[in-house]
Length: 393
Image (cartoon, rainbow, N blue to C red):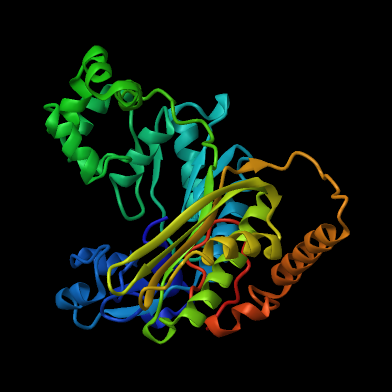
């Protein structure tokens, strides 16, 4: 999807269509734009600080992100894709990969499928929503092809076109190459995507080890990214607002972070085998601990008790400013194992009941009293997963 969050806002607010729009989690000048509308991008605004964007476009409209709204549109786009094929994978909230059947693995049929999906998104989901489609032999090349023509593009990238295709790109335009990776590639003599593509397998394996071997095949259109990585850690962090930089308020926000992390752990059916806590202070000091534990079900009470044991070791040397909490050593809960302790079973059932209520009526409809002081702090950000957010109009 092209400029997805900003385009959704323009879809539901027609008065913003044709105007430069930016979406940010926080709309103050120090906030960061996470999505710029097509009109804003054409004038040079991309991901940047809001104050930087306003220097380029003083009249630019800045909107607070509404994750629930974007998730609703994500679900409608999924429904559209499912009308044409069951063989798809949601890569993120605004990106999908479709695995072509043998029948569709030719030029005309794949083009026809792409055109049908693009047309149906416009007619059934939103007339102001554009998407770019790339067609190639792997998800990586399809993504690169889609990114080469925005907005509203449709590009077929054949393997015999790769040399010319890479010749027109910079290294950081390759999906998966950031500035840090670019520096590593430059260090071993790779200055451009074409250099990267022309390197032989032995050189890449020697200089970049296993990653080099992967890149050799990835750049040539082999499907090597078709695996699911194992989640090992899950958590949340938050920078405290000035009025919440006290010990009592920070503990309340920590309770909220534990509540949110516990929900995710339960929804993905994880047991946790460890807990970590990190607190940064305004004076530059830092407290951080991680503790391995026996595997535990992530009900809110048990999870908080584990965090509280670490919290007791913190001497609070100043005003807290940054919090991070989470669980590690995660493994799938392969079966319902009933505890011999009735209290533990009560906690499990209570946590599941709270999840069901909040899924049905909106996030934090019911929450522990310990979260009360946190208020609207640590809001949900752009989600991926089951929507559980109230939509604010």
